[in-house]
Image (cartoon, rainbow, N blue to C red):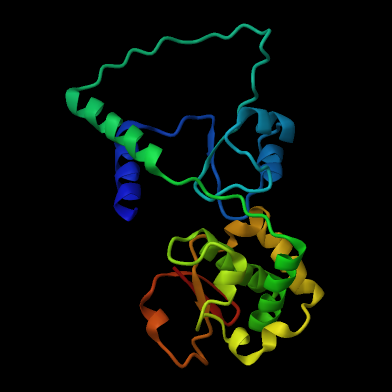
Length: 229
């Protein structure tokens, strides 16, 4: 998968320049914020981006069309484009199309009330002294694991997998969730999911007894927790 993504990035950089109407999503962006900054309505932005199926979930690095859609009854002026590609460029374009077709699209996760409660109890146990942002990031790690082929496919299986979370072992997960932890889980199910993109692990290096996570790539640090890929 890493080689596939590198191929796409390389080919795209050779053949495609970002069009003037494309906005690249950054950390902290929402569709509402993007619409406001580019002086268009949220509905116009949604109409211009039919590929975005969930308006509360966009991804860092994703390209968003920031032009207003032209009504069907208005004439469209299309400028002709004269482009001549070499055989090697044609081959690269074909490889890019094939590679893009193989990329798995991100899953829009939803949790039942009981699953929200379970995840919130884990968040409380793991991050009760952390900020709301730190709690959201912990919830994001669990959601990222559900989508990762390295881990089980359900929330319960991810949380109760042997040796993964200390609160499961010591029973802290059985204590009721506090309001902020519930809020953090609900936030992680929105566009704030991108707070910890790609993070599959977190730990407190000051108290960790095992150092194997030290060698993994760090995605972010919030409070006492370091988040790793």
